[in-house]
Amino acid sequence: MILELQSLRKSFGGLRAVQGISFQLPRGEIRGLIGPNGAGKTTIFNLISGFYKPTAGRILFDGKDISGLNIHDIAKLGIVRTFQATTVFQDFTVLQNVVAGRHLHTHYNILTALTKSGRDNEFENERRAIEILEIIGLGEKKDELAANLSHGHQKALGLAIALAADPRLILLDEPFAGMNPEETNRMIDLIRKVRDHRITVILVEHDMHAVMALCDKVTVLNFGKLLVEGTPAEVVKNEKVIEAYLGGV
Ligand SMILES: Nc1ncnc2c1ncn2[C@@H]1O[C@H](COP(=O)(O)OP(=O)(O)OP(=O)(O)O)[C@@H](O)[C@H]1O
Ligand SMILES: [Mg+2]
Image 1: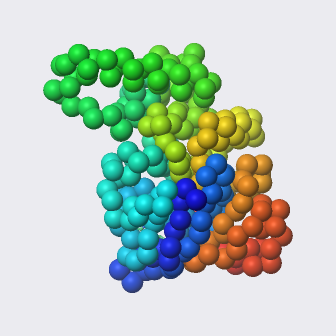
Image 2: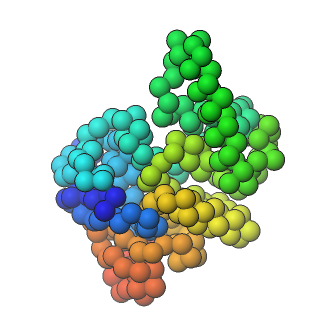
């Protein structure tokens, strides 16, 4: 198992956002994490990636307890997340954005920048960033300002920035939000490519077409609890799941 959550809990004052979630994620899987608004999906991402500390429970990555480690140490171990809102540096070029993503996991400071190994590092960072942009299909746009990209390309750039940190587990928070059908199909292909590079994926997503197309298994949350787990086909026809979504309307 690459990831295991054991009775994970997170409270904000009196609000119990995550109420004892346990699940296991085998290496190489694309796992869907779905549920109505406020179910606790983003909170679980914030816990796994170290943005929040758990109130109780454990998070094991590769069998090692990472609960309570800080964001940088977790990123260095190989867990990287994207954000629900598009978060690229609008005034940077596409390439500068991906190089910035690489700095997340290189020990880079002003002193190393002045040394030969620091310069070699920068060269290597740029080479790897270009390689990632080629994979993502943004190679030809590398010198454009991020602000000038379409919504679909900005989302793809967000994925490239995350990949720049060489993750082994990537947490994608609604990568399909606001996409038209053509952009959606392109993003489905990109996420398949990510998995082909042996990166395990957790996908938080409301677009059920994308979830059905991509996920091996789906974990459904409701009010901070695990409701059902199964294949996408099993989950969409499950009574409890249908009720949870209709109940939220
Ligand atoms: N930092 C915080 N402080 C207080 N409450 C929070 C905080 N973060 C999340 N919550 C609350 O925790 C609950 C779960 O929120 P979360 O963002 O995890 O939901 P979600 O499943 O990602 O929903 P959505 O599909 O709308 O993105 C909500 O009731 C939310 O208001
Ligand atoms: Mg969310």
